[in-house]
Image 1 (cartoon, rainbow, N blue to C red):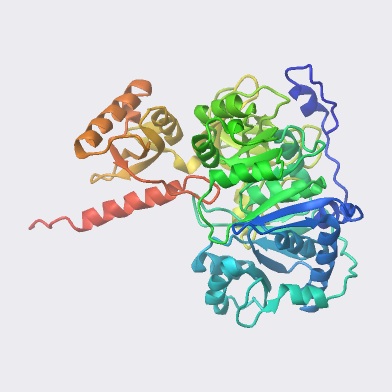
Image 2: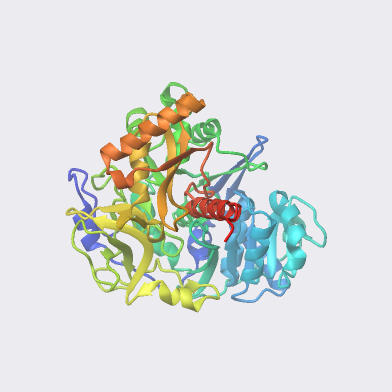
Length: 571
């Protein structure tokens, strides 16, 4: 960033935001800035790798470039043309980074797909993207084999450390390929990545990102990681590199700055392990980390005083997804000496709002717009609303100086109508409701489609959920509308009790009454959940976001089933 840092100033934000300007070259390729320019330094490490069995390895930038050249030649020899899609169905491992670089410098479009996808989800994305090649390891080979016949565009499968019917072996192909490759010249606006949304509120959409998107991510990455990079910085995040938060928020920006990233591969795709997290942080001297609120909570519960057991070098933590609760924030500050930086973004425009050590944080807020991003809260007509007034959070196509913001996606793949509907003039709507306070901090109120009305009152699910979460017996909560027999709705709460909460029919009834009174007293009678259901867990995406639509659909199906099974009265 152009502005110099003033450590003595408690709030450097005004100067940083006003002075920042974008510099986006016309000809630009992610592989050049994330790999090729560092390749001459043979001692520079790109990836520290470890798997669940304890096997470790290192990938240098020099080796990453050499292998990328060979894989680019492999793909070219298979007939892959500029702009064609290559599915990368790999976990965190060195070959994942190599595959991406090979695609970028070939001018192809990388399609990162999670190894956690089941057969139907995988087939849908492969078919929709028209991927011509898939690169896969054993974590997803069985599912890919099952659905391959349903993907007519998929001509070749390259297998990494595994076998499959009619596949090419990654290592054999690389060994046989030429090491010389002349990268394709791409424009900054050319397509580079086709990534799919998580589908928290609707069917997953293919979001086409340009090479320039990595530049648009940098101010947020640098700020949220307390001015990354510094001497000795090492980055780690357990977030899947097939997700935007893992690819654009961890792997690529770390490589952009020529620093090492830690990759951990769990063959069994097991739940997040706090013990593994602390072990990796210590073993690889990790300085910068990005983690979901759920992951941070697991670490807090596992090690209330981590420095008693681990020698850590952490200097920054960025939260992914949900807003960090006060207990986690307080633990991080007291136990780790680190203020967790919130971050807000979407697949279509990542890293646009958040916090940093360079400006004061407000607990519970999203933070401020990162330098280079003109963010506002707008009404249905595209006009900026007043301070503290509720509206839809939106990003302008240009920064405050009138320069195009490079963070923007190109389009929704094969869906021109949805692309058009995403914009209102020069504003790109996020679909998230928020308000901005007098100091320019943004406060999240939930998705537009999450809101519902009861007896004319507008119900804000997140407000009720936050209220419930403050109760000692509640570990997590979700609010949805439940249709009743009259065609109206009631407020329904799904509650995950804390592990220490005593459970029995009588205890549950008492707790329900207590929670209802808690919301009624803290908020209002119409916000009080008329029905509360205790559950072991809430449906979440792989990056810790609540899948509220799953719960809404569940209640709609229950109501329909109940209605259809009512005894019919004689006429």
